[in-house]
Image (cartoon, rainbow, N blue to C red):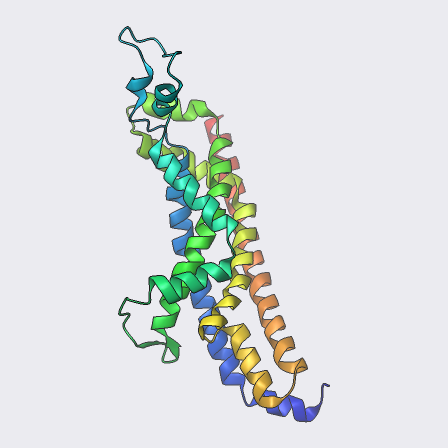
Length: 265
C-alpha cells in the first residue's frame, strides 16, 4: 500500500528512474529516426514500377502474349516491390519480442559489438540490437502508412514532375513525399506513440529502460504500487508531451499549406 515509508524507499532509487527515462527516450528517438528512413525506402520500393522482364510478355510485333501464362506473369514481376512486400509481411506477421530475440541472440551473436556505456550506464552491446530490432519492426508498419499517403496524392503530380524533366526518385522526394507525409502525420504520430511504449520489451535483453528500472525498484523495495505508478506517470507525461508537439507540427503544416494555396490563387 501507499505509505510514507514506501515513498522514502522508492525515493532512494530516483536515479534509476532518471537513467531509465534517458534510456527510453534515447531508444525511442533513434528507433523513430531509423524506422522512418527505412519506411520511406520500403514504401517507395513497394510502389516502384521496375519490371525487368517486361519484354518477355510481348510478342515480336509488340503485342501482349496471351498463350503463355508463365511469361505473361514473369513480365509483370517487380523484384523490388516483391522484396519490400515480403519484408513488410514477415515483420507484421511475427511478434516483436520474437524478432528482438532473433536479432539479439542470433543475428548479433557472432558480431563483436563495442562494449562501452552510453551516458555512463547504457550498455551499447545491448542498446544497439534493441534499436535495430525496434526500427526494423516499426519500419514495416510505418511503410504501410506512408504508402497510403503516397497513393492518396493525385497521380498527375508524378506525371507533371516527370514532364518537367525530374527523375522518378527526385519527383518522389521533392513533390510527392512532402504532401504524403503531411496527409498521414496523425497516423504517423500514433505509430510513434505506440513505438515509444513498445520500447519496454528491451528489458528482456537486460537493457534497463524505464519499465525494467521500475521492475528492479519493485524487487528492491518490495513495493508494487509506487514503482509501477511512477513508471506509468512518466510514460503518461512523455506521451502527452509528444502529442502536444505533434499537434503544433500539424497546425504549422496546415497553415503552411493554406498559405501556399492562398499565394498560388
